[in-house]
Image 1 (cartoon, rainbow, N blue to C red):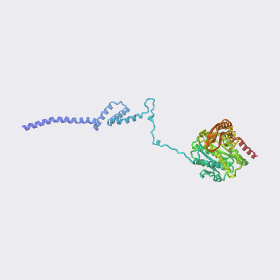
Image 2: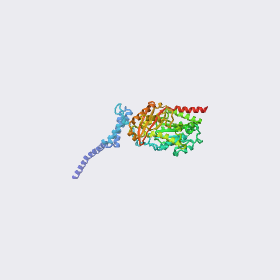
Image 3: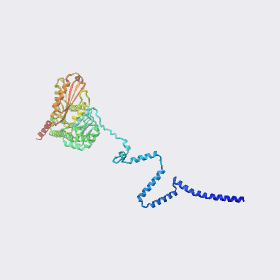
Length: 491
């Protein structure tokens, strides 16, 4: 009996437990569904949500495809935001980027920072252009000159400047015989080979030679002169064929070179030195005609300020002044004197004075004034006389080796420099008044031109006056003399 009662009791307990277990089993999947919805969406739950979404979309059939696509993309953004939730520190860069993308902060205000171009690595590297020095000079002047000589006469002139320390020189010729006699480096000589040994007083040959080799000459100027040049001077003889025929085209080559090195106004920085034949040389009809043609052409260029300055060397005047010299020393002495007179103004303008300085700007204004220029030098023995220095200023232009016959009243600008010994400046009373009187007198002679003054001292026991006048009209009397000779020979 007891055993039967125990079986009945166990069955009843089992019957009571079975509904609870069923209920528990039915609740378990419900709980799993909730947990999966919060933590992670299972494929089953995803399917369940999709079906719900479909029902919602079917009820709203009037929604356009555009709105539907917008709603789907919004739902995806929200789910991704919840999944990749990051702390505030990580969100800040995203906000800054978003602000930079906005080109306009306020209405009508443009944000330039939003449109700045990126900085490239190439910007860190700067181009350092080193100047091309070419041949280095051995003088210290205020102006760096380059010299181009054509023909026998032009070659001799540039060698005279080379001997003084102006090493930027170039000599061109149609015959190697004249080039071989020049004591300058071989690299600074150029033979214009036209198939004949020289131009033979034919200016046409000289012109054709330069036109044929103009590119080679330009290349040689760049190689020899470099880029450190302030002024270019072309030197020729007016009576010859090579120098006379090539002068105008060499001037154009010099201007091309000046533009290449960055000179903005080449007409003011390219000048010419030309020698006029003596009476004996001019007796030849061809020489007289060559000299007159070239002198007239270059004078017109100087008057039009296409070259600056134009300097004439008068061989006839030189023959009269230096009649007792030997043949061997004649031309070297003359050329060195002309080059030395030109050089003294360049050197003095580079020096400072405790009294009155003839500075580089004063010198440049004379050399760039256009027209013709003349220079003179004289020594004043009786400097205590009030009129002695003034008379020296008048007479020193007559002693120059340069051509005369200029009308000084046409001058635009001039410079007068007095160089005296230290003891004279310290001890001679009234010397300053005498110098000032000479300066004022020069202003009257030149038609009230601008006068640049300079007073310097040295160790010599004498007083010297240097005068340079620029912007002059051509020497018509000397040109007329050459023209008359040409006309007389033509008869």
